[in-house]
Image (cartoon, rainbow, N blue to C red; front, side, top):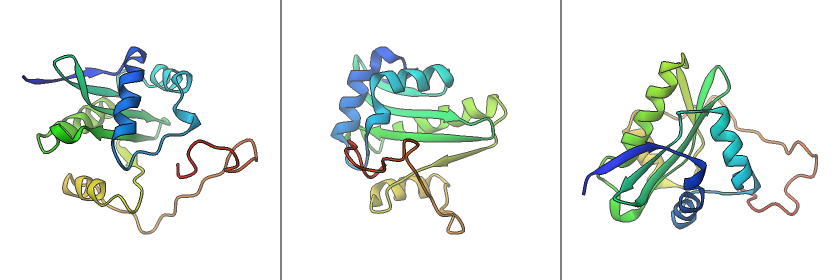
Length: 152
C-alpha cells in the first residue's frame, strides 16, 4: 500500500500520541496534552503532518513558527516503516509550508543521546550549532517538580 501524507488534525491526537509513546527518543510532557496540541495546530495551520499506511498512522511531525524561525517537534516513524523516506517526506512538507509563509530557517531539538535521530537529521543536511546553548525555564517558577517529562 502507498503511504499518504495528510495535514494533522486534532482527531488524530490519540493515535499520534500512541505513536510518539512507542518510539524511543520522543519526550512527551504536560505541553503535549490534547488541549495544548489543539492550540498548537490552530496557531500553525497547515504545517503539521501525519503519514498513513491505509488507515494506520505510521509517521507524524509537529511544525510551527514564531514568525522568524520554524520549529519541528516529535518527528516519529514506526520501526516497521523506517528507511522508506517517510520521515524525510514529512520534514519536506513542513519545510515547504514554512517556506510558503516566508520562514527561511527551521530548528529542531534532539536529545543528545539519540544517535539514530542525529544520524537521520545530519544525513538530511541539518547541522549542529556548537556556538549555541539551549536553555529553558518554566514560566510558573516551579521548575521540574511534578512534571510528566523532565527532559523536554
